[in-house]
Length: 114
Length: 112
Image (cartoon, rainbow over all chains, first blue to last red; front, side, top):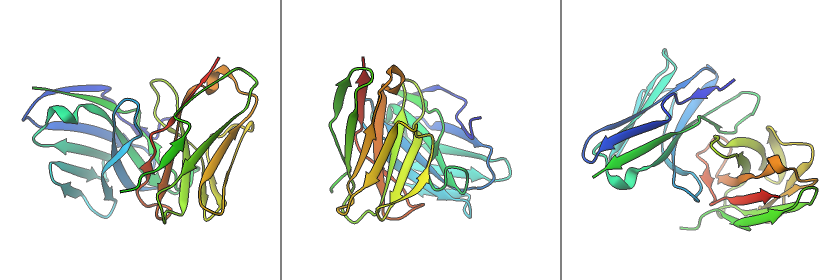
């Protein structure tokens, strides 16, 4: 059973507009969440993270929002740029059967057109 | 800045052969993780090491084993390879457990 869910496999956005990528989780033991970006033939690159004691974390064009009651987080990219086109993985860490390993969602492919 | 190094980047093996993948973590990182990503799938955690000791175990098959050496590099040994083992294998390292993980470029293993 998928503990981290990214229900949108793909998202298309125009350059300069906002990209919103969503992620839901089921395990209430998760307390640290991360977003990774992945280009083909490369390893995932860390983007931004948020601890469960916060509801928002911002880093430049990237902002992550966490709604613990809804077990939902989202990544906002403003403004979107063509170089942002990649697969975005949501990941969570918590004391579960995999210990401190990252539990990934299946990813959302973002395409930003110019 | 130094990144996680994995070798080889590509590996082709036949069924029932063995393979060894290597990972060199970022200097001063004491925790190493191995993940497997099949085609169109999310990365799945295999195993991790902290200070040269196995710290967590995920969905690693019994045919696979791994270890972390005194210089903190890690090796993933895979025996009796099966077609289904064809995947991208990522190594990641972190300063400590539960810290953000930095990923290497991956090793693409193809089993024929």
